[in-house]
Length: 138
Image 1 (cartoon, rainbow, N blue to C red):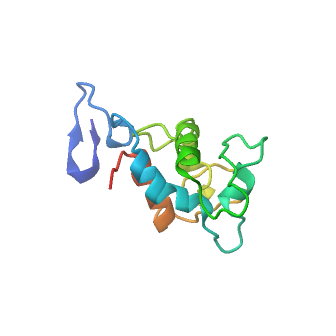
Image 2: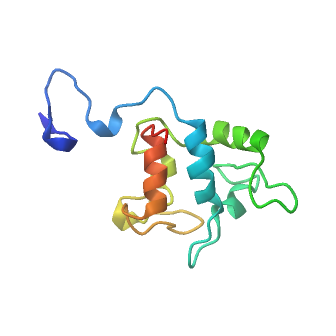
């Protein structure tokens, strides 16, 4: 048996821990309103996600911004939403979208070409990515 969030205990009957219980789908509206701004944000000492992840050789690819644009249009956002689903498995806290930009001492991957964008799991932008992966809609 293992303890789940909120003090619940997962029985040997096969109940999954909270970190692997998948919602039915990821929310496009949440992605467009909350997650895309994370990719555009400038964090001290780091390049914005959009800079590296619009280059063709980046494993996680975003659609390049249109010339002079500060954000993506609706069609581009839809394409980004399709692309992000390759690295954001619904309900899975081990998703690369969460692990890869997170500092190793905070539970992230040992290497991210853009540096560890988030030093802890308490940073608001990382919590936004987590909420997206866990299926938040608002």
